[in-house]
Length: 98
Image (cartoon, rainbow, N blue to C red):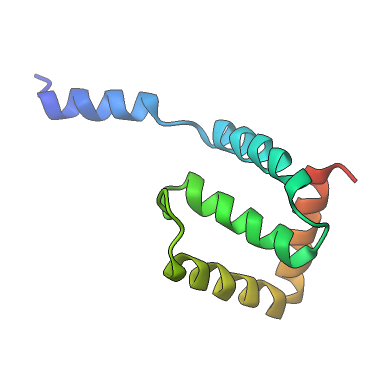
């Protein structure tokens, strides 16, 4: 016997985007943001992080000072870790297509 909560959970799961769909959505949105950004690594990383957090629902419709502090902290952690910084740069470069 199936209860209503199980059915609702199944429907919610069906409507959730897959990781591949999230990746496509992220890449499409990020590419549309690129013309509005300077070719500055710090801005590109901030936009990258902001978009990820927004798509995951961590940041709401309005970006608060707390959200910006979180992004700045994340940028700092990335810049302190050489391997992570290289990986983020590689991802941004791959999305940009150059």
